[in-house]
Length: 87
Image (tube, rainbow, N blue to C red; front, top):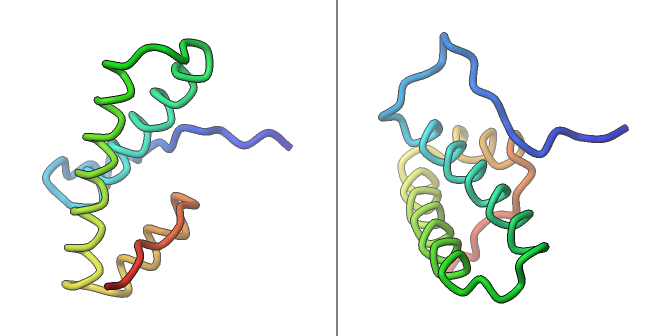
């Protein structure tokens, strides 16, 4: 079974300001850039953009984990990404 790497958001849930929507859109961008960088290894500007998006997603996820741990866990499981490290 091949899993679709991009996550779609139903139109009913599409609240573009919500943390979940932003994290999902960042995750889609990250997966798209990762597949691009597998072909173009020396595209350093795309690598920089990927690092910036990763940092933004990490900050949003840490905010969500502090505000609402249940929604954070659900989102992590839905996106199939690792939890952020606790300091």
